[in-house]
Image 1 (cartoon, rainbow, N blue to C red):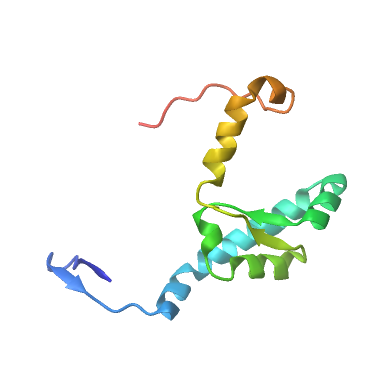
Image 2: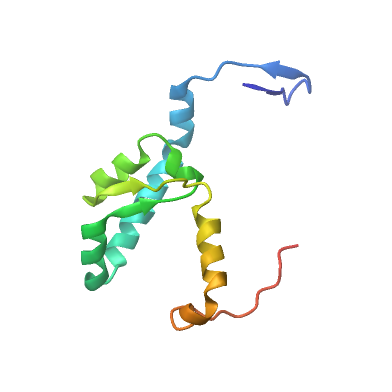
Length: 118
């Protein structure tokens, strides 16, 4: 890994093992799994039956963390899969919603306007 040494300010290269990366991500991965479990626990039974039948689908860059789907499946006892092209799934889904606003009007949630971040 290349970067700038924060003490000297000079460029530096160090070796980082996969174990170092795993250790660095461990707390975040545990939080993700805990939040998925909480979401499953809070899901109404009629929806949970559908989720258990079709599974949990992971999207986004985080879904590409090696073994995350297996860990979530183990912890929730629900089949967990990574969708095809997870990196663009959210954008493609938002695009579909925008293209079909009239048909989706009944299921969209109305929110108050928020100020853009500064």
